[in-house]
Length: 135
Image (cartoon, rainbow, N blue to C red):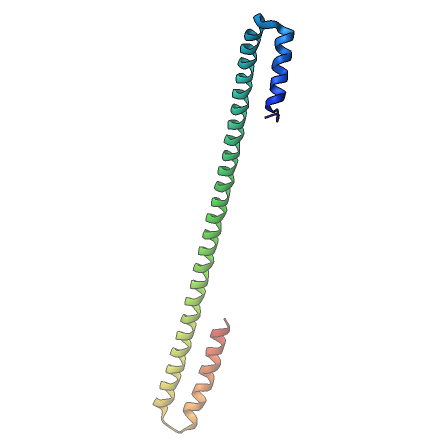
């Protein structure tokens, strides 16, 4: 702990024996052991408290990240649903364009007057289809 070797401890014990005497040395050693034990327990309690606080802060951070991830997932899901709705609208418009083109062709086929009639009937239908696609 303090990087005290065997010879340093021996020197401290010899000085304590000379200064305190053989009668008081065991009592002083017991009291010193008691205080050292209290200090170690207090240090271990402080370490445990610090570890507990670190763990709690990590848990709070993870919960925050979890909420952020869930929110991002909801945002992505709503964007996908909007894109899917847009895709359906585009498909519906193309289906409408095909229906208009088919009806224009059937009108031209029914008139049967000349070859120019179906072609002239298709031109307005395709212009109408382009306007629907632009919408």
